[in-house]
Length: 281
Figure 1: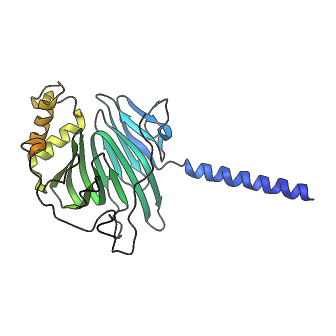
Figure 2 (figure 1 turned 90 degrees about the horizontal axis):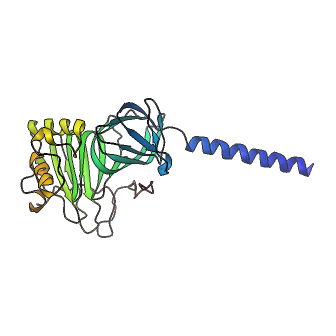
Figure 3 (figure 1 turned 180 degrees about the vertical axis):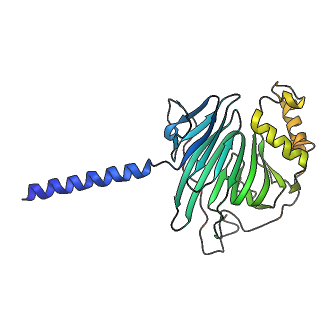
């Protein structure tokens, strides 16, 4: 009898593990657009596989678009992420309960140009949809925005909704609040720049960059050569004259996305901390 109970316990444990593994591997989104060469590193592991329309995207996956390629993912909360050519992101974390509306999403941007549309607004003290870059953490509250990754910083522009962001460097804890048609820049190891207005011309430039990416900027009369000169031109096109040398101004302050030792969290809800998502090989 003891043997039967033991085998029953083992079988129950195996079933539990299988259910847990299946739940962990459940798709949190699907490709709704695949143009050109788009690759997925499942759970951040090589080799990369070619992405296909309607393929599932799971937590831990790394997605990269090659030259002249585009991709769009629709997540289970009806949010959309569109990637321009030569872009790379990781789905560091994504959980969503449709019944309760609870969500935790963390997308990690490594390079390129991204357009994000988050349609569900959650009434929470802290944002539950985060976008992380090498210089900023952006908290989304029902938002359409563009993010442009450059070696020396992160440009982000808000089209609609509300978004708050802070530098990843803890020496600069101030959080910037963006309203519709505003942008800012988070330089490497510096304070965020003052919020400024997005002009119609800048909005059109962003739409074009979504089709061309940052490498192919010949349509702007900039050429395809690499170097600081081309990067400075990109800054100018995005309404940032002077590029990284422009002095930082005091940003508008809002409650922080994540508490710092100098400014402890005051609200009842803890902020989502740094995620432990995949790294890019």
